[in-house]
Length: 102
Image (cartoon, one colour):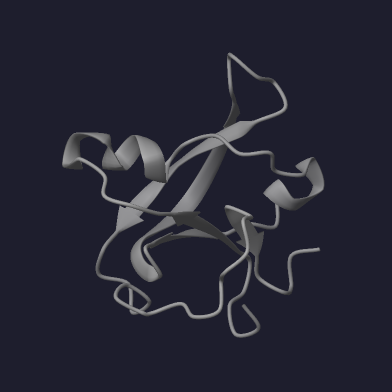
């Protein structure tokens, strides 16, 4: 987290059917309004491994829960972070920010 800039990390766990993977990666979370503009990339961490990086993020509110936001973005699986192992993320929280997003 210290080395990343303008990033939101999203943790997903478990075996996920390929047809459901994208909806899990781009689901809805409670994201503070003041942080949305600072987020330049979203890093998806699946079972402790970076699986996707999304850039050029555009936010939209959930129709079911206005307190939650989803996103669309340019997906890349060729980013240098893809395949990186993320250690010591043992807590329950499903998302966290890079240290510069406050």
